[in-house]
Length: 550
Image: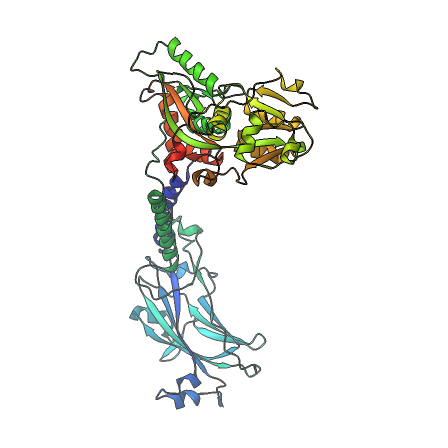
């Protein structure tokens, strides 16, 4: 059964009271034989009683009782059905239904002190056949075992109507061999009912219920209270989830069809996972979102693909394409009159360098000089005597545009592009000479910087962190001592980030797969995926400026 957490809480909330009701009233409650120890005291504890002297002077067989104690027991029908003599689960030839053992005590005598109904009397005494008077029934009496230092009283198989009860007073003394003087252990009750012999009662045939300690309660037994407590806890948890979750978490609205995604290679891993989760959640709607390798080929290329799809589909002005979305790092360059964008989140970027360069921190001024070609050897920055090899993304890359706009530009509107490529292929870089090359994706960027002595480039921070954990040749650069973090961006301490935008061709029609996926990504389960990949949703930022596209 594939249920989410809220559904499991709802099932448990129904199951607990249902099972509790069945247990309380259909199983335990039908045949429940209960007991209560209403008094268990030594004679010395009754010194304030007007009968204290009589209690202390009680004798048995000519000797005064040693440490006499008195126990008052109450046996009751605590269920909702009659307990008959055949319901007791002792052998049929055993007239005793309940045995109570007193450890380290010798039974001196016992007497029934109270019967809730006169009809119960015949279960304890009956008229003598050989002479006037009464005699105790075979199942009522006591035995003492000197070897185990225990006294045992036997209570008969009493037929107990609803709410019937009887009380037994037991007089005991400490065994003469027991010189410990320690307090006596509590009495131990043995007995059970179950009506397993009743052919017409199939439930009771398989239920064995031992004599249970009953307590003074006005509503329910302890198991019932436990069930009620669990139910209350489930209700509180479910209520807390409902109240604490953001109100914009609407139920998932699945729409079938094929959705084409393209754009930023930096944002691609997060979008790919969100798409996979959406497909899984909407498996019954025949959803297809092909996001394999090669489907994301950069912000500029993705936007060109979007516009081509809209034109080929013949989308009229005022209408929208419902099966294409392109993600870009910031606003795409050029004019795109039919492209609509919405802010999704912002991503943090980082500079990366090959370990051979011998640097870990750069100022913004040093970064600008590097990309302007003014610094050609890392020794000029107190690094190793290794030539600088700049690895850039192609023009149109959102990651490159973010670098230009956020780091290289001295003022708004500057367009300080990195130095032009000196070779057509990064593998042609000369190990002994300064050089510049370009690659077409984030993974190519990280691989090239890692494998090139003096290599220097840039990447979305989560991809760089993941690569650096397994690749000791790749080092993340701090900018003016600041790490690439979300908090650093919002505090204004870290300069290299960009707003992630979702472009559609026109406004996607309501009920289209594109509209449904954007809702999932920004308001439903996709939010958790974006957070896991180091992005912060624009709807959650404390500093709104970080989600203003540059």
